[in-house]
Image (cartoon, rainbow, N blue to C red; front, side, top):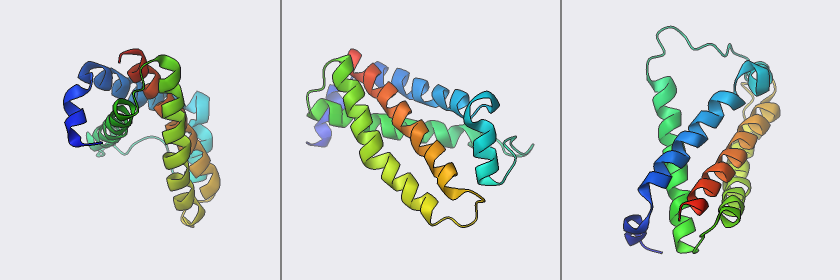
Length: 141
């Protein structure tokens, strides 16, 4: 694989998949879903401070874009060209990369009351989000 794959990507699919991944986070971390459990596990209030600024949205959006772009690049290099292959690609990246990274961090984060619960909620979000992004990328290839 080389960076020339960037020219072969469907950039509209990358943008739509990024927005879908990001929007999933709004639902995933809402109080009616995992928000309360995540809040308790983190040991802090889910409501952002009044002076949080745009970073509270810009940073997650940028990370969703980065993960979606990497997924699109791997998809292009592996000739992922349909929705089922896209879902599988997202699951492989989510389970193979996001889950271990989030869990190793959670295992050693003693600053949170329930670090493994915090990590499980975060890893679950990325696994589902990357599967969603993969589905969109695979569908639009």
